[in-house]
Length: 117
Image 1 (tube, one colour):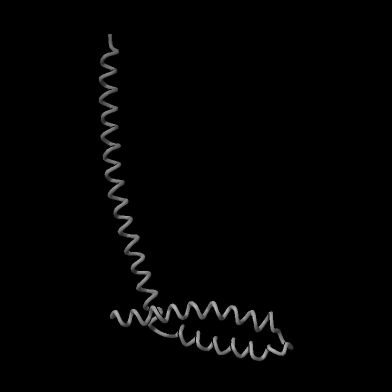
Image 2 (cartoon, rainbow, N blue to C red):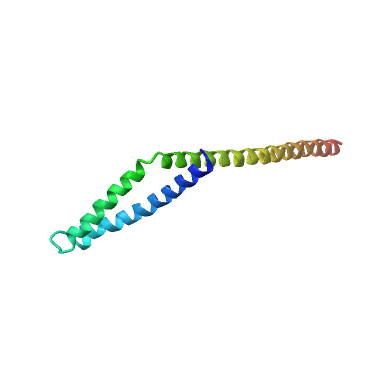
């Protein structure tokens, strides 16, 4: 995916997100605020239907799933990098624990030797 294709896909995804929010508002207008037989119901329903068609066209746009996939891949890559870093830290901490355990065992042996009459 080129930079331009990604930019277009991101723009369309942003528009889709905003239009879906507006779709909820228009649905409320058509079904709650201006329910049938209200005089504005016809216009509210038409606005809702028009926006539904636009949202459907955007959802069918192949660039949007590609952007979602790209974002998911980047998220997985980032999570894997963080996991690798934490695993390195864990290995370092485990080595410190192992050394401290050995030091305790050595000190205990020395203490036990001093206690024998």
